[in-house]
Length: 556
Image 1 (cartoon, helix red, strand yellow):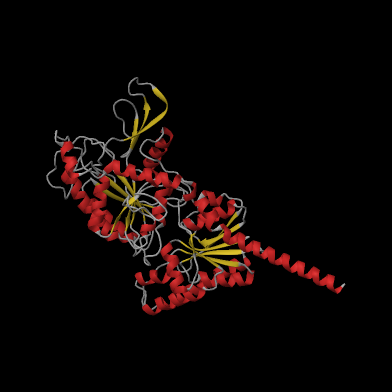
Image 2 (cartoon, rainbow, N blue to C red):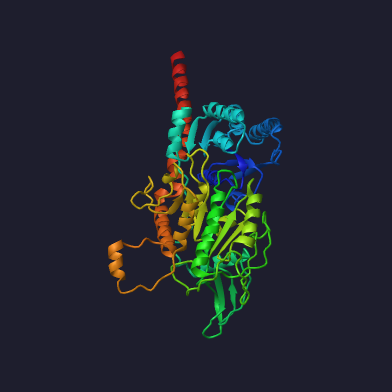
């Protein structure tokens, strides 16, 4: 029976969750161990072959004292080592064949898993997501602790019977620096549920409408032509506007002038480019105000969070009211607002999900910007959703934002994969290994062959440019010389809805291919690590039995 040790939030470790479900789908019994945090997905909770072991997080409050940090950190590591080892050794049945562990965190996970593997006589498989010591460096930990962590990470890694990693660059680095042969298993969306374009069926549109309404970005409102439940993005019509008769079921539609919805999964750690985002958001607001003037007014701002079984609610209520308009604090004299343009968005709503150490100051800054700096053309909200609601929000979005900059420059952002799984393109912080996942030039597809699926940025200026590309520009009635101008300047680059639709189509085409889906790639890359070793053991036992039989014959 394979045994998994996951040291982290058990509901927020997507790669390990996917490993668990894949193992269970092959008939393996899986013990899924991790630190107690958010609730796991329903697929994990309801699976008969998966047993979840939740461990309490010791000393969960941040250690602020630089003097006490080394002592308290050492005590915390020792306590977690004993807790994790005892659960793996004594908390499960005998007969475990494999332990699959993610790193980081390497300490105390790798020592604990190594001890358990020796006692249980199990094979140890290490899945490298990143390098733990680089996270400590970026977090500003003392140099001596970082070097000690790096040494332990290297030494304990050598005891693994097999290794996986998330990128080609990481595999090469592990070979050169740790003398480890690691098989590359790229993260891919576990289950593709995205849409190719805006032409969703009514069932999908209605689900999106209900979910976006539950986020309380707007309150219901009645409009002429039938009862319409209205939010900033969609409307659900229950009465035929032509006849006045009730419809058999509500009809959902996108609002013509709806905002661009950008979802940003965030860990609120030092390797997230939060400052660059805030600067770009302010400049994007100025850009939109210069084009369209002020925006729709919002009111009723509150800050709430959701966890456990409660309904998902964003941190800020936004109610769209007719006839109530307030001047934007930083907006210049409003420009004439053009009629709704089919390709461009006139406003943007950013929704940040997740939690982490820097969330509190980020929320405070967003609240200040929303209240005193931004017009109504750009709004920034935060939310913490149940595990099952997170993909729903992504599927409602037009665009994903990934601010992960990578401490090692060797890993790939799982957040971007979540976006691709929902069928939406990404705007992502650029670093050395990102080209293995994100393509922004059709002449240079990813190593696995995916065409343009996102835009990358290296600084605030490039992030602003990415946002303006995705927002698009107002449609203009061209003169008779339009064809001549285009012939002279070349084809106009895609922007706005056309650009987003094109990238979504590429994502759908790539991940619809079975060879690029999680299940097929997992079967090809990961399952042999278990089956091959099992087969070798069986063959070894058979060979020993044959030798014993031959010896008995000789004695006779």
